[in-house]
Image (cartoon, rainbow, N blue to C red; front, side, top):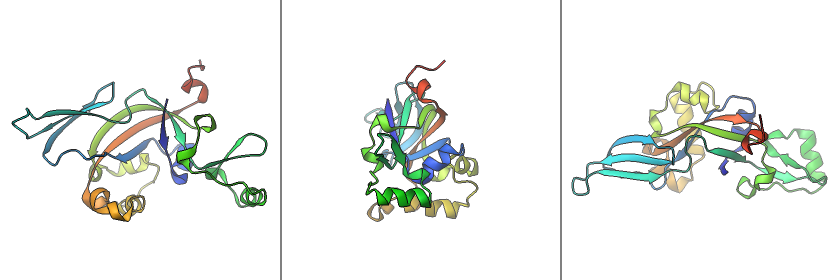
Length: 194
């Protein structure tokens, strides 16, 4: 099983049934002389073509996810004194006060173990495109509702380190991997569902 990191807003949108797509920057970026993008095959290889006549132009690269992969979502979390887990996406002012009173610290999503996961996804489609190729329907599937291009550009750039804006920011129009998914139960994720 693979993992995908979601921030608090993405977790809330997924739990509310508003999010069914995620975009991540392709690293390293495809070559500048890429002229055609193919499909991602069932093993997760992206086929693309460059205008490099000396090497035939055909290339492939493994991408993180492929159709039918099962993912668990990593999110900001903490362990409770009763051995269960709590999630930052669920906090309300009173529960945050309780957490602080007991001195329990939030752990970053990157440190979340698989056993703490509560959200499981089945990948239904994967493709690579330029960031600015997304449309209003994609923005809605990202869980952001109807945003103008300017609003989405601002939101995208807020997630990119300032030093990387020239490579991965909205204006740079980087190649992104788009992962489309459906939420499934833990039982389905582990093959114990009906």
